[in-house]
Picture 1 (cartoon, rainbow, N blue to C red):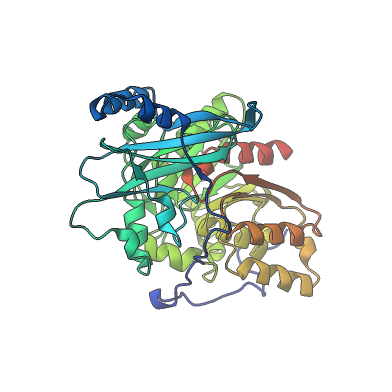
Picture 2: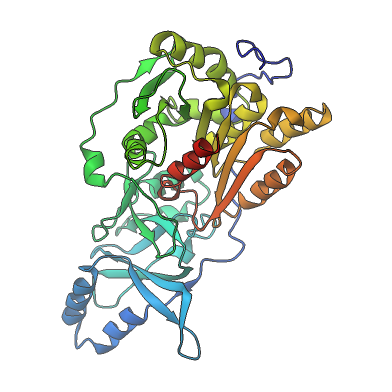
Length: 433
């Protein structure tokens, strides 16, 4: 085992980028539009209603059973297509002139008119239906445009304004399944019958009662919270989460302890590392700033000194999503002797640093330094920008004799998908040791 107190000579050391230098994620259109269809049920209600008041009342009865509506798909011969369902979103707003539905990675930010809902004539209701495979899961919200307002989707060139509006969309009051995004806005969640099972998650009611965390600081100012699963000994595994404030608010420590009590995972320590806010997150997780060096050279010694966490390197697991996923991968391939595993979810592999680092190791004939690693890599089928570089990563790692598990789920860049995949990934890592 190498000296973990000092980075190897080939560790990349770069300056923090300025805000002006921030890389911009690609905004390319979906290769094919999301499959919009009509709802047989809503069409029947419209045809059978005597007047608008009756139609309004009938729709209210239907949504009282929960939304979105899920209907069977029938083949031309009349048989049921067991692999797909029609999913109908309904939103009530009397004053809206238009309504955009933001369904994670079905809504195309380069073609927003395709996600405009249709008003059901004579009512306050708006509708839109997609035909999706039965393993699909996604979060969604509604963005109404009121009279006299310029719809935000007409300002497509202003990506900051557009993203802020989409992130602040309204949830679905008729759907009890929710997930909150980075800014704490709760959205509806649709999950069809064959979507991956998500266990041990807290309900929104339970999340709302969680006490506020007490953030501590390492000497350089990074904020963190130390949690524990079960009753870990000093040498037990350590699980590091980027965007720790988000995962603390998602009740991840409680989720992990539920899995522990169910016998699915052993005891271990948890290190929730605060992002420091949007700008610092971009500075530290964008692949240029060596966040792995902070973890290895500052955070781990600090945890040993002040929290008596003395986990051997091979039992240290690092996890992140998006930029955090990129940084998780970059950490374990930049400082492989300091880590045992990474869980990278929808990593921002549109940036080149992971591939550049692999090429450095390949050129130096040092890929063998990665053989002890266990990588859990996942990406959403609907993430059309990220699927190709993830496929490339898997191909490049096939030549390394490591434990690599690659998962493609039917979903997007979405906490609704990520949150339930962490426990199974940890279970695979910790039971393989």
